[in-house]
Image 1 (cartoon, rainbow, N blue to C red):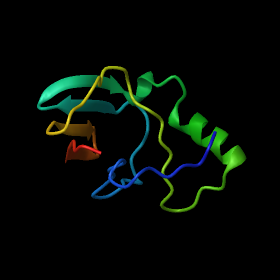
Image 2 (image 1 turned 30 degrees about the vertical axis):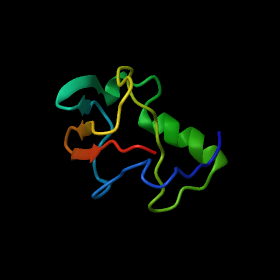
Image 3 (image 1 turned 45 degrees about the vertical axis):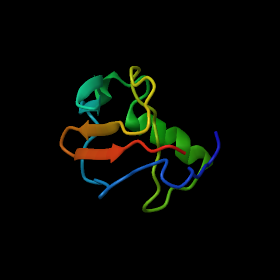
Image 4 (image 1 turned 180 degrees about the horizontal axis):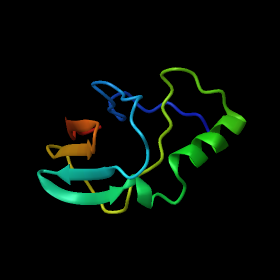
Length: 102
């Protein structure tokens, strides 16, 4: 496992990060141009959030503001400049971003 920093504009987060929400069975949905391409729940993850955090913290000290990325369900497929991607997490909200050429 590596710690990494994404290229500028490659990892949109925000406008805030929710810290007081459970990880139980939240619906996660991704839409590209209003077409749903992913729909799953956190309950379907191979490893639950507590197990992932327990494993990560064996190797790294997490500090306030750190983000642990867990991947996403299958289905996104290719995106092209001009597409609009919306990710929604139940109880948190939605984040919508345009796809731009690199």
